[in-house]
Image (cartoon, rainbow, N blue to C red; front, side):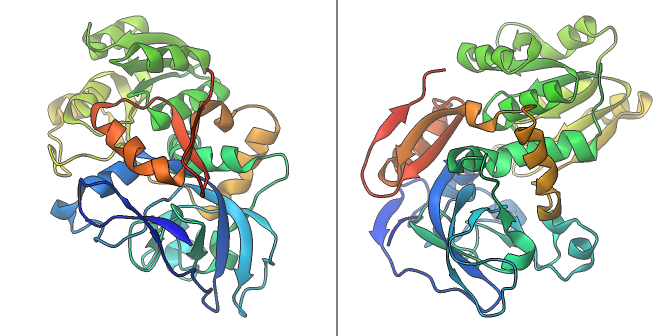
Length: 362
């Protein structure tokens, strides 16, 4: 089978023929129908994470936002059979630890990060294995396309879990989203669907236009104005919830300073080698105004049914975030385009044979 493999950091991924995986007794093998290209893949490709002992090793098949069809089933799997349409969380649990048993498999003590470690080869490939399938796999409803499920990826589920579960955004809340890439635009959609008044912040015109399309009532070009005081003025005191969806020191601090007293800052963006996992925050400001800091990662597999219902009822449209469908052979170039933020929205691999790019008119 063909796969995109990380051979050297910051060098183009290698498209190679490799052996098709076989399922473990507790796992399945999925034929990939679609896989999103995420900034977390870019972090892995760049070699980030060494400061936290989290650097993706060379030789890894990347890709962690997949949907597909079960192609082979281990003899201990009880729930799934060949031919099932499935969505696959990137944060895979072992199904047995105390966090998995409490419905929080996204922070499993012995979990797997799909596409980021040798025990969990990724989905920039024609086929990929999924461990502990009965716990991790989710049946993909017929009304949700493979492309839409790939757009859920890590970005949309992270936004949904952060805003609906971790913070419990409510109707009428002011929510500021700093960084309107795929994750930020997902958050705009989710917050709008939850009834919030959303402000999108970015430094580029096209993402800000998309933020407006997906429900932002205000947008701010942070290259032209200081976002935090502008948000405090627009919201009569600050956002109830503010999210850093990029992971830069500048956006994290701006997000914290956008929050009103007793509000919440949500951190979902991961840092680069400029920050090396640590950002200095205005802690006196946070203390004085009793601001909460909440981190959020992915979403437990046990809660995917909530999001599928949200989609089925028409509250959100993850497929609407897709701006391009590309082939496996295009992935190296699309990752490189993220160096200078040249991608917009969500790009999804839908062809694992030929090189092509299909732009989606937005």
